[in-house]
Image (cartoon, rainbow, N blue to C red; front, side):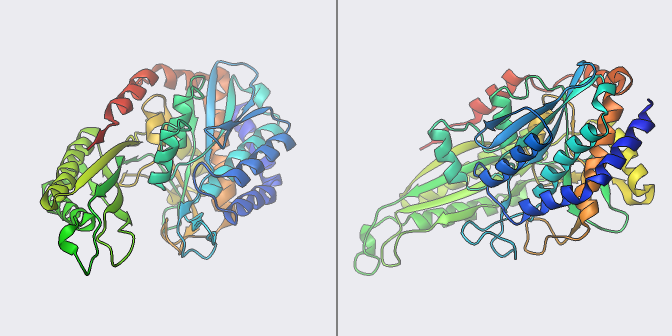
Length: 438
């Protein structure tokens, strides 16, 4: 059976299951959960594994799971990833009333499509014709939110990283994977139903705590040290550095104050901030990070406060694999027409798939089907079939390209991809970055 016949079979199989795939995605959409807390979504994924007759391991990086579809031969192992978590967007109409979590980024589509890949490969009985294995990875915590809470998890030894893919790397769950296929949702625009390739920023994260001295704000403010004033001066110092950031480096710094004091009539003595420092390359990120720390320290010095700057590993920049992207592009064209598929440029957001891309070939294309801007209350599913089903087809077709004909394509990609970092070098790099300044 040739490649096109295999693709035709999986497309038909996925079409037979499209209502089920959409229903899975919608069930996840209306039950949004934040990273490392995705217990309902994880349970749904595991229930679907069981229905498909797949053996799996759960509880990876708290809520992640891993299932396997063995091929006729085992020359290469290709992972398909789906992200379990939502983002914080309390104004979204489908937001969780307690946590503010909402799927205003489209990860529900990733999980549904990942499971759709499995349905297509199993129902069409394609795996015996492939010379490699397919591994499904349900991954927690792509959205690096709730930094202070996750920092406590790190201090308790429950996680090492903000991101779930990073955590799976550290746990050795990607040691047996040769390459990774996944996608991200996006809003539909003229000429854009799918986007292949492209790069994105990386970032480092910081949790900052200014420590002052309490005093009665009305009766004796002169006896206090105002940590909020120190924080505001630190933030102004960051702003004063913005003109030093070069446009080509795509630097983005966007701090928030998570605690501004305790009571209005007490001089703030405990003020907390979180921020990312994003950029196109790690040297640019680290240069900007030093300037940020300098400004934060200056704010404390100005009023006699103290500041703790806790450095937390962020995500590495996203770097595509051209050949894998070409395969995805060709399959997207087959499904959607060349006029609706384009090539990506550089994005200033971030994803922990960038970390995976530094140690193995991987792709992270975009498929549309939504309206509204991501991470906002306006982001909604507009075309369920495009949003949930088309990505399952495109990824399955790409996997067939990689693993059919003796896995010739996958083996060539693997041979021609020198890892930018070994796992050991990757972990050492982030370990050396992590420190606390007092």
